[in-house]
Amino acid sequence: MSRTTSPLLKDLLGPGAIATIADAGVAASPRFDRGAFVAAASAGFDALSVMERVRHIADALHPALPAEYAAALDLLRAMAPRLTHAFQAMAITEYVPRYGLADVDRSLAALADLTRYGSAEFAIRPFLAQDVDGTLRTMRRWTVHDDPHVRRLASEGSRPRLPWGTRIAAFRQDPTLAAPILDALRADPSAYVRKSVANHLNDIGKDRPDWLVAHLSRWPGDDPQSAWIIRHALRTLVKQGDPAALELIGASHAVEVAVDRFAIEPAIIRLGEPITIDVRLQSTASIDQRVVVDYRVQYARPGGKVASKVFKLKTFDLSAKAVATLTTRQMIRDFSTRRHHAGRHVVELLVNGRTRATAWFDLVDQG
Image (cartoon, one colour):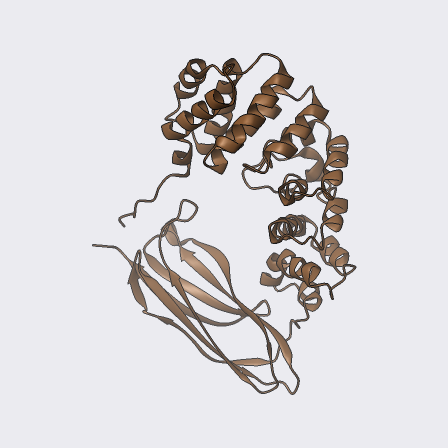
């Protein structure tokens, strides 16, 4: 099957990014050695992944910055506002853990300053690995910071399963270590922060589902900001049909509905074409019910194997004996994290975590 071409994530840190960072350094201070930076950053660059490039650029900054660590941080702070993409800022932020683990207070203060330009969530991980208790104490103080980027760093940087992030041994043993941070941010006014808190809690739920449900049951569900976090934090458990998680969002595992229609059209597609999913539900209950409707795609894989992924459709209140019609459209195309293969793809309709109907579509070769 032919593949559509998509830009590589690492290209966001290509030669143009090196030039932009070099220009920012020169504009920030005559002490910045542009030639030394560009030479070091360009060496062996092409073969590196995006996160390898982040670290490579951080190391390339070292010969270009003042030898004194405090002066180097001051220059990085002056460079950050002149950058044009968050990945560029992540690269200069990465300098802090690579060269400042011995100067913790100064380094963490620099990360709090730099995170507003490109998240310091990866850069703070080595500090957590080095001293989890001390670093978390500083991060708890950030929960009352005026800047939402800093408050988010407190939550995002301490996620037990941060994507692409270094795994922290202490969080493997106890993924709930940052719970005081999450409690402090449970009604944060920023959606940017609340989303991080929800993702952090969802991480915990993958290892400690009982703890997650019990902990969130003590949060004020009548606060709209906390309620939003609760719903999104429980999304993995809800997709799995966990009865306690469903109950916490007001949905019963034993919802009373009949599936009048579950259809996928067209039944045969090629890569890059969409499918449309139509659902018609009929309440069979004499009372109103909270209904959580998802669908799970069983992606065909070579050798008869499958890989599944659950997609959200809608959560809503269904009146007694009422009918609900839902429609969604999904483009079947490749991503860097998901490649499609020809074959039959089975799709399950999930209602409050239970499979209530199945349908399918065939993905055929482009030729």
